[in-house]
Image 1: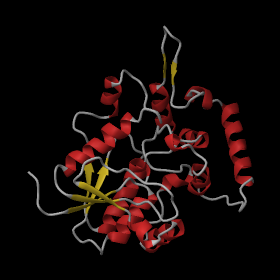
Image 2: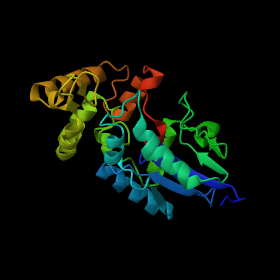
Image 3: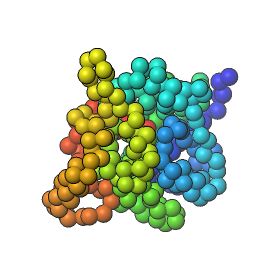
Length: 270
């Protein structure tokens, strides 16, 4: 049943920007709802960070799932065709559909954590009853402000930022090579699970892999891991400011050079 009252909803991904926005809006919109679309394929570090954010907010972050349709079920529906930048069925079925089902026909203002220093938009629903708002853009909040907000709240950053540039599924196809290496070294069991999803069609010989030109088995070979690390180190050294900190800083620059179709889904990674 449609409600006459406007609902205020903030989707938290487990990343820094949406977490900072939740902190930022906490006392400004008392009636705000916090939701997390759980794919069931998230990192333990993501769930741990969400628990910290929830404790700070003093409010429940409602977990949304599409009943009976986890990643493995959807994979069967798509004939074992892995999601990719060109076919983002994981975002559709595991993020967007559960969110829009939760909203229903109510009038909703959906708060999105895109910063003032980002020249792009996030997920915008096609449903007319959902209106997107960008408080950080409106108020001139930039990346350094996000770090400050999280530090002052005592939340800091999720642990996965030590080796990964974004939140989202552990096998996200938008990961850079060095991030796959990070998964291999920090969560070898998850790396093996991701590798098990890759297949080769016995008849056509077509490979279904997370990356365009390389399987995870190939990437995990010691000589290849060493090569990826060396290339990554060289890439850092070439940066004008020589910063050697978080991957999010490095890939923020890389994102500016990416084709629009190859940018990560904001609903997953904010």
